[in-house]
Image (cartoon, rainbow, N blue to C red):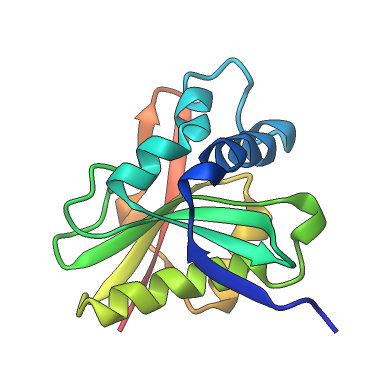
Length: 164
């Protein structure tokens, strides 16, 4: 039986850990180059916590993953319309994958968007993040190719949305 996953708001004493976890997932999994300027943004969980709702997946008292929930008006929201939320920088440690941490984090974002009376939730992802794509598909997200975009030359992000 899998361990229960508790999603909660990150605590300030966890920001460094969350930053390191996010860098580990993105860089050491080969999703982002260690030389990318994006690594500093991934590491800065304190900034995310100040400008989003930074959530963690807690498994047996340990942070197994994190995500930034971006309500309307968050400077971290990149493609959401005014009546939508967005989530960014979903990261789950390799040892916690397949045990519901990623699903629980995304579900918490969905719950927050619905509770706020918004009409949907959006995200951008890299084409090589295939495990995440399977999760989004299983959770009812639909590809929105008309919203795909490039934050920097040579990097194309694909987008998904869940609407209700």
